[in-house]
Figure (spheres, helix red, strand yellow):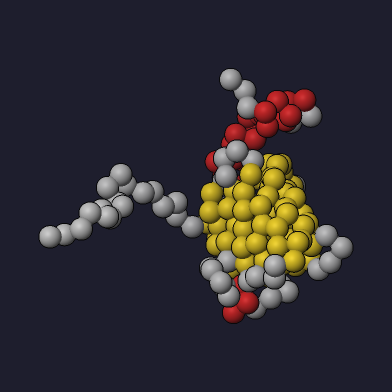
Length: 146
């Protein structure tokens, strides 16, 4: 069965093979290491700054007091795997939205730009982080010891 995202990509004339190849390179959890507008203290204020691309074309991010959900598309820029997204979320509890893009600079590094709708924009650097797998027995039992 073909996913709705794949149908849209086919209708738009996108190459499914390229999308699948790029997906393997882009999908995952990325640690935001640098943004031109904000220092490290702000980026990691609540959590370690991150951006995450899920396999279904959706994702989420947080840096500083900005967090949101994304709808992304895989593409290429100058022959390099890339990702472009729109986002909706909050900036210090106020509704916010925007867009962004990033290019796979190396196997473990993304570089790009993050935009607020009618507002600031900033450069972005991120490093791939290892995917954490949970084992079936990793949850602690809630049973009381006697």
